[in-house]
Image (cartoon, rainbow over all chains, first blue to last red; front, side, top):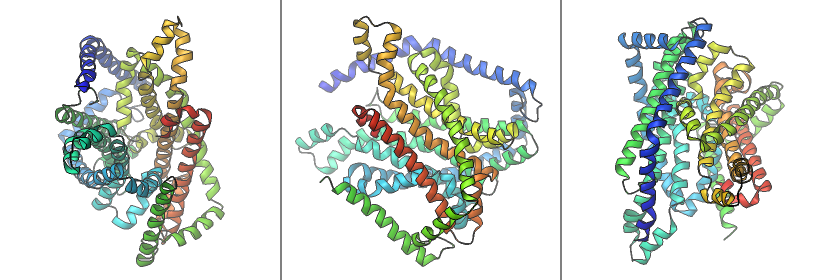
Length: 271
Length: 251
């Protein structure tokens, strides 16, 4: 009952904000992007097209690469190792993160190890990964796993640790057993954090995917980038960058959409 | 009870070291060098003439880019948190740059500015500044309206509210932003250096070609120490300068 009273104003607040503030701000949003593209265009005029291509040239180049099937093929292959690596990272990070969040002993045991490994920039492991997995597909998957897992573990374990004690205590005082507590209290309370971790992880996976293609054997998108950089074809480099940007933002938005769909019980906190 | 936590922490690290040692002895140092071998390699690396110049060549462009990111990112983030107009203007660019990794912009920046110090500093700046901005935006947005209302009801002007309410409330988040920014600065710097094969990144590349993995592990260990040391220092500063914010600066 009291929970309803507390959460009610938050909902109306969000609605009012959406009704009052959305339209003008959305307009500024678009305006800012257009202004940025214009500045880029003007600046690009001052450089030769080898060094900095204009936005139009990038679009043309992207269209050419799409027609020649060079770009779609590279993107498809790149997504392959990204998805496999991401799935493995989830399979490792979610259970470990949840256990670390809920069991003090596991947390104390793993916390320093996770922090120590997280402190090292993951690309520094690339030479080590080459020794173990070679230069190709397996190595790319391994680097994606390496780059995603620890970020996700940290998010999940922090989320699970911060689960509201009072909620669990209420469940316990109503005689809920461990399984019922998990299903009815911890699960709905922890799901948003799991989604945050999945979102952080997916962006990291896109980063890792291109890092792997540039630092191990240059293939797919990485090969396009490297070869174009050598040929001073800045339009192609910027084009691949734009594709990566759209891919990352798109995946992030999709995760956000799924989260909103599933976590309907948390209207205010789904951000 | 108080002692249990550090004891379990130590147990975890000990367990890792033992497993690592066993794996190292079973598989040999071409695949995975045991900790005992890594310690020897660490001493050798520190004695080597090329190491200290390479380390220095990594640290100072990184600090330059990192400090520039803080100097620009903190005011920009604060402005975004307090003004919806600024937020709407900068937000699309912030989310765009955060999604693109340091590795992906390296080829473009090499075309634009070559492989010198300017290139390294700019990469670190671009990779760090948006994280600082996002953290400061969140912090500035979440300054409790109650604090501001109190100041307003005591007739504090716009500037006074900013100077005496908002700025002190932001202080712990400045240190959090500095800490998270540093992690990203180091990531970007190592990525850039490994790509062009210069400085510390060049050493890492070379160590990867070595027949034994011990030198590679010793370099990774040094990176770990730098990162843990620097973030620990920032944590300590946060704790010393504003212990009343400890609950916020810990996380």
